[in-house]
Length: 108
Image (cartoon, rainbow, N blue to C red):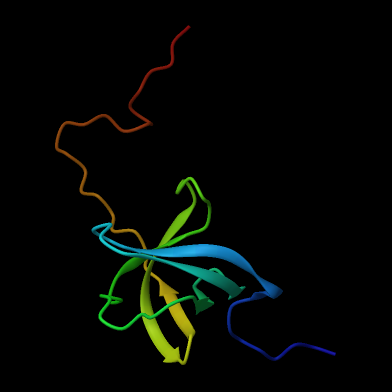
């Protein structure tokens, strides 16, 4: 049987995976459970209130050291559950005269 679901493939966690969300400026942080995730979005259950937080843009911290994270924006709130969409990194402009990887001679 073919799967007609055209959305991104999503991984669901039956008990949730412990993560955090944090403001872009680092002024707030909330513990969460990651319920489901795909390449483009995630579903979280937030512990504590999100009232008054700037959820237009924030980080989803996937590790306790903060080395694995995604930049997010809020899509939907349903009680303590929120849907978030991952934001794509902005491409940096190349400086004029900067060497690209192809320009570097790896002579030997």
